Image (cartoon, rainbow, N blue to C red; front, side):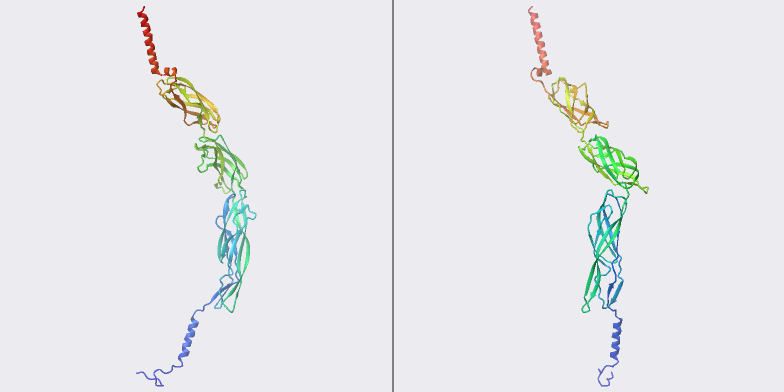
Length: 445
C-alpha cells in the first residue's frame, strides 16, 4: 500500500525542484531550433556584354538574320542575413526591361529591325535579340563593328520602414553602347551585264551570249562559268561550261553557251541561271551564288497552206501550184516542200525548192499531179512537210501539212467525157453508127 504524503493526502504539493528543471528543458529546445531569417543582397550591378551567336560570316548582297546574345555577368557584392532582414523582390544585378537597338554604323549593311525588347536579364543570365538585315551587293569583304545600344533599368536603392514590413524601391534607367562584329566574306559575285540570243526558237538549238561581271571583292582563280536550267524553263544548256581563267574582281567576261529550247516554248523571255566555279584564297573549289537572267526565245517554226483548194476530175492531169506561208517568228533557210501522194493521186515529182522564207512570207511549190480515172469524187488532202535549215545550219522538219484537193466531175460535156463509162458507151455508139453507115452504102451500090 502506497504511503501517504506528510500532510496525510495522496496528492500533496509538488517538489520545488520540478519547475526549474522544466524551464531548463524548454530553453534548450528553443536554442536548438533553427532561426528563421530573410536574405538581402546589395551592392551589385549588371555587367552586360554582347556577341553574335552561330555563324558570323555572311555574303554580300544577301538577306540575313543577325542573332545577338546579351549576357549579364553582374554579381551581388553584399549579402545580409537575419530574422529582421526584408528580402528584395528585385536584385541590384538584374537588368530589367531590356531593349536592344542594332544599327549599321559605317558598315555596308541595312538593318531592317527596330528596337527589340528581351525582358529582364538576371545575373548571371542571357537573352537573344534577332535582327533582320541586308548586306549591300557591292559590299567589300572585311570585318565590321555594328553599334549595339542596350537600354535597361536597375534597382538603385531600397528604403525599409521600421513601423511596418514595407519597402520603398527606387530605380534608374541605364544605357550601354556595345559593338558586335559582322564578317562579310570575300567571294566572286556574278552580275549579268547583258544576255542576248540570236535566232533562238522553240524546238531548236542556238547560242546565248552572256556578259558577266565579277561584282565581288575576291579574284576567282581558274574560274568556269556555267549556265544552268532554271527550274522547268524550256531553255537548257548543251555545253558544260566556259573556262575564263582567273576571274578578277571587277573584271568582265563574255561567254557563249549553246542551248536547246523545248518545242513547247512560246515567243517570250525565259530565265536561265549563271554560276561561277572557282578556287578561293584557301585553294578550295567553291561555287558562287546563282545569278538569274532572261533570254528571248522565238516561237516554234510553223507553216500554213494558203492557196485555194485545187479541183481536179477523175483521170485528169495538171500542174498544181501550192502557196506555203511561214507563220513562225524566224527565217527558215533552204526550205523544200515534200509531198507524199497516195491513191488516187500520183506525181512524177515529190520535191519542190522554196529557198529562204522570212516570217510572213509566202513561197510557191509546183507539182505535176495525176488523178486515176476511177477516183471517187470527194475532198482529199495530200500530205506535205517542209524540210529547212535554221541559223545554226541544223536541219528540221515541220509538222504535217495537208494540201486540199477536191475530186469532182466537170459539168456539161466535160463531165460526160471525164466519165470512162460514158466515154465507153459513146465510143460504142459511134462505132455502131459508123458500121451501120458502111453497111448501108455497101448494100445500095
